[in-house]
Image (cartoon, rainbow, N blue to C red; front, top):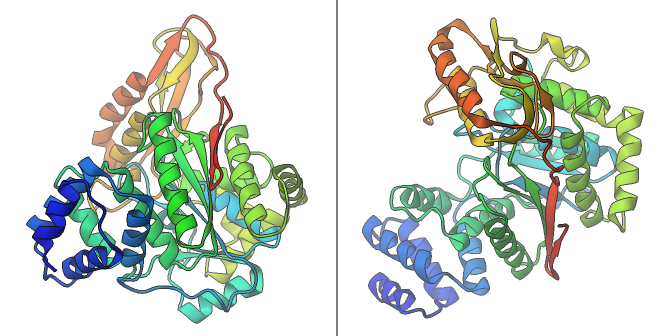
Length: 444
C-alpha cells in the first residue's frame, strides 16, 4: 500500500477502505508518511469530501492513536457535552452541576483556549487553588462520590488528530466538514463517553458563520456518533452575539455562579437548560425535553446545582468562599466604560470583535505560550434589542496596567462591533435546530 495511490484514489472521487484510512493515519502518526503527502491527501478531502463511513473510520483511527479513557468504573450512563466554541461560552460550568444534581454523572475533560478567552479549564483556574489535574483513579472516584469532575485533557489523547490539525492549519484545509467533524468526535470518543450532546454555534462569533454550514457540521458529527455506536444529538445555538454578558475567565465564573443562583442572564440559563435537557434524556433520567427541563429547574431553584459546583470545587482543591462570594474572584485594577456614540436600539453585535477586544486586554491567548490574565475581559451592558442613549455605556473593559496598551484597540473594536438602528429589531431565537440520527428539526 502506498500513500500516493490513496491520494490519487481520493482525488478521483473514490472511497477509501477502512484499511487504507488506517494505513494513512498510522503512517502519518509514526512519521512514515511525510507532511507533503498528508497535506495533499487533506486537500483532496477538502474538495472531494468523505462518506459517513470513511469519516467514522478516520475518527476511530485518530481516537485510538493515543490514550483512551475507560469510564466503565463510573456508575450510570456517561454523557459528554461539547461546544464548537464561541464568545462568553461558559455553559459547562453551569450545566455540569445541574446535570450532576439530576443524577447523570459528568466526567468531563476540557481543553485550554487559544483565542478570545481561556477554555473551561482556564476559567476554572480563576478559582483560587482549583486543580485541573487529577490521577485517573481520583477522577473516577470523585465522579462516583459527588457526580462531577472537570479536568484537563490527557497529554497523549488523539496525537494523530493534533498532528493532522497542525498540518491543516498551515495548508488551508481547516474548513473541511469531514475533517472538522472527525477531529471533534475523535476527542469525545477517546474520552470514553457513552453518549454525546453537541452545542454547534452559528453566527458571527462562531467557527461556522451560516446556519446551513452549522447544520452540515452537526449532521456529520451525529453521523459519526451513530456509526460508532454512541448516541449523539446536536443543538444549533446562536452566536451572533456573546452568550450572557461576561467575556473573560473570572468574569465568566462569576456569571456562571449567578446563573446557578437563578440570577444570571436569561439567554445563558435557557441555552444551558436546553443542552442539559438532552443530556438527561440520553442519560436515561427523562423521556422528553419538557420533563427534563422541569427536573433541572427544580435542582436549579432549590440550590442543589450550586451545591454541586461547590462540592466539585472543594474536591479539586478550590476555595469555595469565592463561590459563596464571587467578588473575591480575581478583579482587574482598571475598569473603563465604552460609551455609545448615538441613540437607538442595538440591532447587531459582531461577537468575534468583542472576543478579540477581550483578548487584547489579556483575557485570551494569541499564541500557545501567551499568559492569560484571569481578571481581564469585557462586560457587556447592552445586548441585541436593548435601547441605548448616546453617552450610555455599551460595555465595560476590565484590565490590569500591564495591558493598558490594549485599551484603545479594545474600545474601537467594541464600538465597531455594535450596530445601532432607529427601530427595535425582532427578537432572535436562541436555538435554530436540533440534529439527531433521525434528521434535522428546525425551529424557524
